[in-house]
Image 1: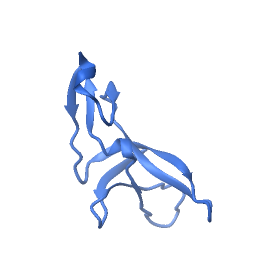
Image 2: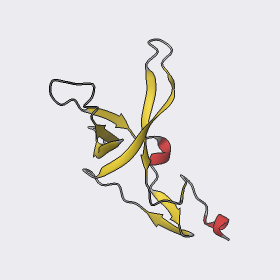
Image 3: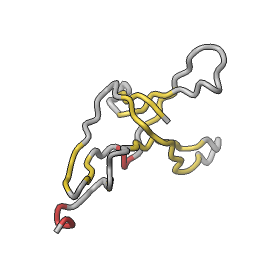
Image 4: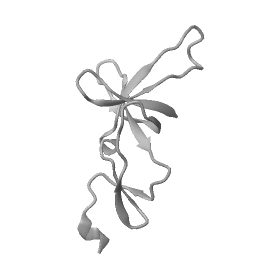
Length: 100
């Protein structure tokens, strides 16, 4: 899926996206918080540690991840996981010592 990076009023990163197939009358935006592993922007490519800077307004690829359901109303706990096609390995806490 495609979306746009933005921050909510609390400064939390979200993906703004729309499912146009579901809404015949007008534009409907959905906002989904980034998953924990997407909050990290450190990745490994060609054996080097690199960074992909999160910028507001940046168009991104993402997928919706469901981490469970609310026990009262059974709504899913969804988050958006960013997909970086250029990334060989994407890890939240990559240790420099593991390169050696």
